[in-house]
Amino acid sequence: MATITASMVKELREKTSAGMMDCKKALTASEGDMEKAIVWLREHGIAKAQKKAGAVAAEGLCSFAQNGNKVVAFELNSQTDFVAQNQKFIDLLDEVGTAIAASNATNTEEALKVTVNGKTLEEVILEASGVIGEKISLRRVTVLTKNSDQVFGLYKHMGGKIVAISLLNGNDEAVAKDVAMHVAANAPKFVKKDDISADVIAQEREVILTTALNENAKAAKPKPENIIAEKIVPGRLDKELKAICLLSQPFVKNPDQTVEEYVSAAKSTVATFIRLEVGEGIEKVEADFAAEVAAQVAAAK
Image: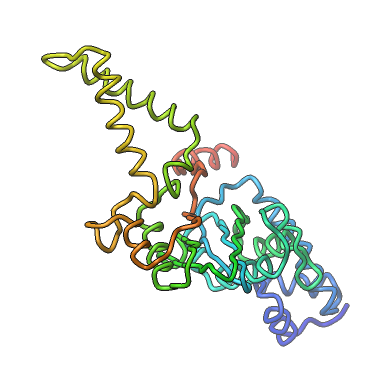
């Protein structure tokens, strides 16, 4: 049996970032062969990551990467915010963004198949899960492209808890950055009212009507229902639709003017935007530590 020295363990640790004991086990299992030990760690790292497949990864960071006239926005999730601040995770975030931006991928499924140094991004992320010790997953990959008459505005808030990208017709990058900042702060859902589907408008009208009728029923002097439907609901609906549309929102840096007025003054128009916020749409599992302890005690009996 080969003698495993401290220097061998140190070398393997530096190459893989794995723990000292894991490195020693890998070297022992591979009889001191460094390359086989690296493979052993990869295999066991993947096994550890797969055990975490059922975990909820709702923390992490969003980011973007630009490659010429293309920008990719994406979300890389972890289980805890602590891991999301780890340098290994941040390095992985950069590696993933660079790889996707340099590829032809346009969505998450395609991005996971992108190859980096002989491995797919899915394999790279899975291996990182084993090394870092938490489930890590790629989510919500979106790509924007621009032409020569357009400009991107890129903004990242709190290191990537929120990222926003604006695409403007025009060439003023400062204005585009301001619009992206506004998008991050105010979370519009659409560029303008014309972009809202009839189904969404009908659903919103129904919610407003029901709310107004409930309020009216409790009023000291209720109004006729036709007045509610024909006079009150349209005004409230218009106000609500303006609130969720970027162009009609009060501009974050100057609420006395709308975003449309601010952009128009710069001889620009908004083509589209992207906004990602970490964990949107993921149902987070609240840990019941008392239940966990009880389960462990029961299992130990």
